Every structure is written in C-alpha cells, then in structure tokens.
Image 1 (cartoon, rainbow, N blue to C red):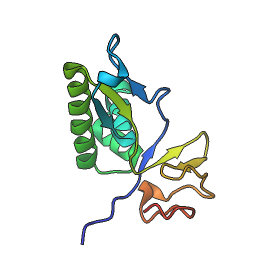
Image 2 (image 1 turned 60 degrees about the vertical axis):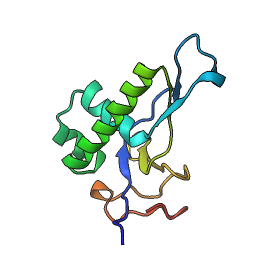
Image 3 (image 1 turned 45 degrees about the vertical axis):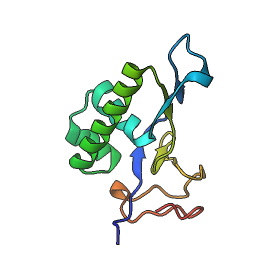
Length: 131
C-alpha cells in the first residue's frame, strides 16, 4: 500500500498562473505544468533566500521532500524556457494560508474551521476529505 500524500503548507499563491513566450500563438504552444507546491518551494528558496531546512519547515515537509520539489520545479522551468513552452501553475495537494490564522484547502477551496496541525500531519479537509 502506497504511503498517503500529505498536503504541503503554501503561504501565498502567485499573481498569475500562466506564462507563455511572446509572439507564439497559444494554439502552437506546448505546456509544462508545475504544481503549487513546486512554485512555493522555488519562492521560499530562490526568491526569499531561505535555507532549505527553514523552507522545508515553512512548508511542513522534510528537507528531502523540499529538495525533490525544487529539483522537479527547476527542471520544469528550464524546460519551458529552453523549449519555448508555456508554463501553467496548477494542481497539487496543498493548504493555502490566507492572512493571519486563515487557511484554505487547495483542492476544494473551502476555508478551514481550524488551522492544520504542526506540519499538516494527520490533517484532512472536513469538506472534501483531502488527505
């Protein structure tokens, strides 16, 4: 039996969820899809300049999981840039923080009545059963 995937903690969503090369019509573009957790890992490590251990703590994951997310995200971004593909941010298993003490399920979008436990362990969305 596979280990259940636990939701990652995401502090903020990006202002745009789609990027494309200029001058190429949408109908001619291939897409690369990057998950919200991968974007959050990039934001924390590459933009906020946090150490990986600190970034992992922020997301409620192990340092090894953060490293895997970073490796996948960087490969996808490089592929999109070098191959002239569109980059779409979508999906993932995450809990979105919305201001002080407010959390929202990344799957169904409902606001959570209580914040998830430390590191999201044992958390399930009461609305969609997001594990």
